[in-house]
Amino acid sequence: MTALTQAAVSVAEPTLPANEILEGTGDAPFSPLESRHHQRFPKLTEQEVERMRRFGEIREYPAQTMMFEIGQPGPGLFVILSGRVRIISRDGLGHSTIIIEQGPFEFAAEVAQLSGKPSLADGLTLEPVTALLLPPHQLRALLVAEAELGERIMRALILRRVGLLERGRGLVLVGGEANNKLHALQSFLRRNAYPHTIMEAETDPDIVDLLSRISVRPSDFPLVICPDGNVLRAPDEGQLASHLGLLPEFDPGHVYDVVVVGAGPAGLAASVYAASEGLSVAVFDCRAPGGQAGASSRIENYLGFPTGISGQALAGRAFVQAQKFGAHVAIPLAIKTLHCDRTPIELELDDGRCIATQTVVIASGAVYRRPQISQLCRFEGRGVYYWASPVEAKLCRDEEVILVGGGNSAGQAAVFLAAHTAKVHVLIRAPSLEASMSRYLIERLAALPNVELHPYSEIAGLDGDEHGLASVEVRTRRAGKEASTTMPVRHVFLFIGADPNTSWLRDCAVKIDEKGFVPTGLDAAADGQIPAFALETSVKGVFAIGDVRSGSVKRVAAAVGEGAAVVAQIHAFLAQHRAAIAAAR
Image (tube, rainbow, N blue to C red; front, side):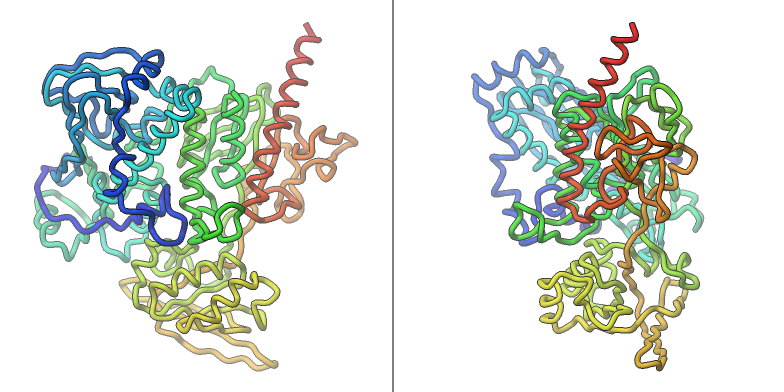
């Protein structure tokens, strides 16, 4: 890493649609943040401050002191009793913006303080300050104990993160649009609701001037310029998360009640219900909250959201809920293997650490299916994508694109892309969409003038240039005849389904069926042993829910339902376990 001299240069507009991260519904954006200022920065009453005193301790800060600082672990929520504090956002290029100045009966914090993650803003005292500090565990206790006050505080914390996302301060990513590593980092940061800005290495004159002062090679891109001035050269997602302090520390001697593997709808639901009921919970995911559902542009058939909700917004809300109740969330951090022959059960992480737990919930979902197309890997992130978010929509604005797939996810993606592109070519092998897509989506696609359906069609080949994908060979088989055509399309979206994500279970005793899914209940019986619970696998204390479970209904609502149901079964298992230990004594 190299320290980068801070310089004031113009920054490109942020690409994050902040309203879709935590608050959006997939419809029109919610009211502008300016009109919700009173919700972002509410004033507490004397009675409310008094109720909060039992959760914190009084701290004194001299004038011109940093109460909290970008990149440093957040100490918690500060209730200002006297004095004034200036809240500042900044980035690695020397830009800084005053967010607000706060005084008595106001509080300083945002969502990161729920779990003690590094702060995303500076808090500078303008004069001597007396404040009531609520550390993260006490802040979470307050949110649960004081429901009405907790609701106001939680709304403010979320809206403040949304404000940071809209400003785009924080990390600066430097690299060309054709850089697949840049695309991966941008998608990772967006799905994890982390503020950032994209700048062009070759076309932005200020960046060109800035980069001339440090030694960089083509292999160093993308560069990630951090608010502390450090530069990361072509980091992967794990390295970036580690530098940003997003991964929690684990006490090697602690034994969790439950470890949830996967932060999709099923895993997040299990985490929220388990943590809210007092269980010690850790959650792991190798990418971002929401799983495949998190990449959906709009979910319209989820109960309670008549106008629909984006997968990102749904996942973002559940993610905050899990943190509110004290779940330890580690993203991105992959599980290498499950050691179910140990007591207690242990999960080995990719970095070699082992996490001990009484029970495990397998909610690892599915991995995107990759078709057998020559040179596919070459163009992943450089013209070939497995989801359609605003990041990808910006890349292909006003161009023609190809989308492969005939399921509901493909239909939702086609509708979303049609609003940003010149034309969407939908390729399916079947004669029509009738057997694979919901009627409302079929009708919607038929009504869009820039969506064209190509039945009996598939991709036969890909070709590119120095910028990435350049053309696609499409093969059509109809009535025993085959024809091929080459389309000058630079963006392809693959929505052809997914396979169960169970490779990390290959070295343990958990039974896997012939298709790679995890059987539970009666289906998991082995050697005359029948699991005691409907969602339990062939190994006692190991449960499976969501898309990875054999026979599950592949719907978001079903996954959430299983996430809630498994917690009741975990309680019953733990009660039996404690009773067995007591009897043995």
